[in-house]
Structure formats: C-alpha cells, structure tokens
Image 1 (cartoon, rainbow, N blue to C red):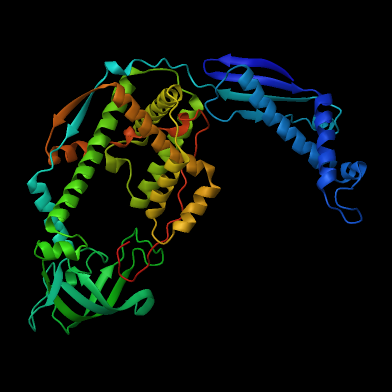
Image 2 (tube, helix red, strand yellow):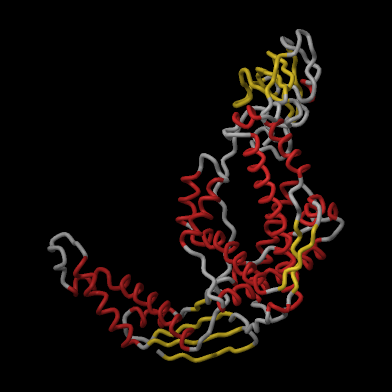
Length: 483
C-alpha cells in the first residue's frame, strides 16, 4: 500500500492511498476459496462447489466485498501509522471513472482512493489545581421537611361527599361522564364513564375544568372547549368541541393528618422514618441542583481558559443539529424570531457560537478523559439504559430494542456519563469553595442556566458527530385530556 499526503492545512488532512492489483487479487483468491467451502448450491455437495463456478457466479460481489474491506483496513492502518486522530469518520472518495473501476473489479488495476478529514487539535491540558470552583450548598431545614410532608399529605388526600346541593369548588373532586362531539358528530376517544377529576389539576384541555366549577351532583351541562393547536391528535387540533356532561358526584378534599398512621399508610414503620426518607430525598434534590450549577461553573471556566482551532465539520454538524431543533420547536409553537426580539441572522450567529462552545468543550473533555483513562463500564451503560427506559412506561421493550439497533443513539446515552465523570475528575483536582445559599437562591441559579452548558459528545471518543434520535413517543389518547 502506498500512502501520499495530498493536503495538510490547519486541521484538514487528505491522504491518497493506492492498493496494488496483486494485493487485491491475493485477498480475492483467499475469499473465493472461503466462500467455496461454505456456500450451498443446487447440484453440489455442501462445501464442494468448484472455485471457478463460485468465481463465475459471485466474482463481482466477492471482489466488491474485498475492495470494501481493503478500503476500511488500509484507512485504519494509514491513520495509525501516522498517529492521526480524525475528529470524525474520514470521507472516502473512490474512483469515478468507469474503465478504472472495471479494471479494479477484474483484478487488473490498482485501487486508488483518497480520504479527507480533520484531525483532533492538539490540546495542552493545564493543571486543574489552579481552578477554584464554587459549590453551592443548602442545609435541609425543618421548614423544608415540613413543606415536603404537607405536599405528600396533599397528594394522598382523601375526599368526602359534599352536602346535597353543594357547589363544586376548585380543589374538589367531581366524578363525571361525558360524550364529546364536533359539529354534532361524536369522535373517537371523546367519551368516558364515571371519570374522577380534581378541579384545578389541569388534566383536561383548557377551559374544561373551569366550566365544572359551581356545578352540583346530578347536574347535566354542555362543556364547550376548543382543542389547542398543538394538541397531540392532529384530527382534533384547533377544533371546537362540545362535551355533553353529567356530574355524578362532588367531593371535598380531606387532607390526611401527618402522623404514625399516615406513615404506615405509605409503607413506612414510623413517622420518624418518613421524615428521614423525606430529608434524604430533599438532600438528593439539592445535591443534584448544586451539581448542575457546579458543572456549569466548571464548563464556563474551561471555556474561558482554552482556545484552539475547531474542526469545521464538527461545528457545522453541531450547529445544524441545534438549528434543526430550534426551527422545529418554533414551528410547533408557531413563534417567530421577531417574537424573540431577534432576527434569523442574529440567531444564527448566537447559535453558531453555542455550537463552537459545545465542540470546544467536547474535544477538551475528550482529551482530559483519554489522558486520565476515563471509561464507561457496561454496568454503567446498563443503568443508564434502564433509567432511560423508565421514562417511557409500558414501552420499555421498544426502548431497549431501539438502543440495541442504533449505535449512534447508544453513544448519545454514553456521552453525558463520560462528560460527568470527567467533570467530577476535574473538580476532584481543583479547589472547592463552598457557598451556603438558600434553596430559593439555588433554584434561581439553576433556572438561569442556559442551553449552552450542553457539550457536544462528538469529541468524547474522537469519533464522528452523531444525530440525536429518540424512541417514538406513544401518546395517551384520552378524550378531553390535555396532551
């Protein structure tokens, strides 16, 4: 194999590779004999098909297979011999001349092709001990615990029937049966019997629950609403509907007392144990928010500390992905750039800067992780996949199958795990400065975090950028519910 560098400009590289006809013919002969031993053809015993017959019937396809393998193997060898790390999968350009291709496929001509790519830039990693990283901490106060217990009690509250003729109020539970129709014609999924509905829960489409406020048990009425333009069922989106409704019962909430019996109702042995569990969950929530803020602080510091050339194709891929998501969201919500007090040109500049930041941080974290031998174990990937599947109740099997068949999606699952491990490594080497804040202050800090704290995972394994894929969402189509 002959390798010639034809381009070396910045991060861009191009190599011309030539594989001799004799080399191809040798691999072809080996492969033909392998096929002859395994192929089954009518009229021949298994493994006894003559080589000339195999060549006559499958010669072209076998040579195509040999050529593809040679291209892949020689590309890896050429990169390894020169210690080049492509930032993405190299682009291979094969011959276009028909006569040249025929000579190669007939084993009479050399295979000549080029590979073009950009390399991962040289990054000199600085000493992280020089960084001072703030960690915002919140003490779990008795007030927080009491507030959480009140919320739990409200979630598990009972209801008792209101007096005869009493009107339903916000917070009450009404039991209703209804038949929905559009232009007088009932529609699929628009009817239900004896459905419990807590007024003010916003479970149904806007306006539905409001019209039930003030009703009494036994009352019949028509609830007129309009389905939102963004409703999950396209046939109903934006259309006015009438629901012939009967209120079967009106019940007032009865909040549970927070005592030993309540704790046992939740499956815990005592009120003290319930308090412990609540305190632990609050602490975990606060720790998560604190970690999110610290992660952003680390990334902001790294973004300011490091500047290096970026592979243009990675930036373009990241920008395209961001822009595609942005425009899809704007189309879905029917918003314009003017609604955001900007123009498309200004937005493009802003989001390209975000794309550059993500790629820069991704490459940096990839380099730090590589130098420190940071890896993601199969067990960690399995836990992440399980957590992802839990987000789609009833579709767990489909989610597992989706990730099993989509390597790119699996890499997207791996990226955040790798990213967090590297950030934890950096934090462990830096100086941590704890800052006591209130929960409200921490919540505000986290809410102020923008999307730019995301990192492009393309640089984590110095491979190519991946598209973002998700399993198909299955909508729960149920009458007047708000999707």
